[in-house]
Length: 163
Ligand code: NI
Image 1 (cartoon, helix red, strand yellow):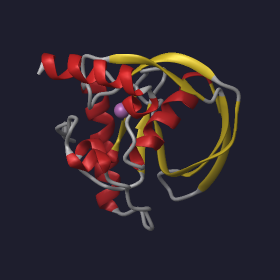
Image 2 (cartoon, protein in one colour; image 1 turned 90 degrees about the horizontal axis):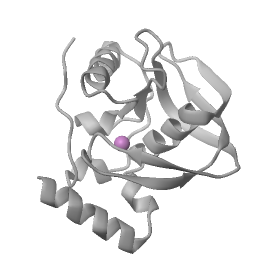
Image 3 (cartoon, protein in one colour; image 1 turned 90 degrees about the vertical axis):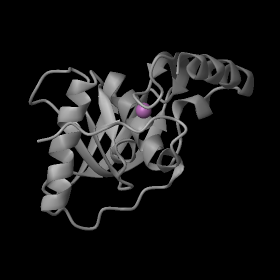
């Protein structure tokens, strides 16, 4: 296992639409193990493949931060999104800043697990929020894009001043 380096804004890979995973091979399995280790090492609750330089539709999540309870999500699709909730959010690719982001409260997640099995599960709470944030990453979208232009500008100034 290895700790991977996390790509930071404005790295171009964070803006690319990621490729659908057609086959889960040893390469993907190793990547996923390393992503889980990297997520723990960075004390995050979610991490997407493009954040470690791989443009594939994969992310890992762990709202409980408890080892062994990681979610591995491949080719996610968000269905039946309902309700709205505004909560503070951050991103490992934009360390040091956070903002209130409006997200759906509940959704139905369709995805493939590590064994390639297709699953559909209803989600709410923190996991639903992480899933929306990480699925955005797979489409080249960052949480700052979900803010108004003035708020985004102020936040990016803050981020740049910290670098
Ligand atoms: Ni993020």
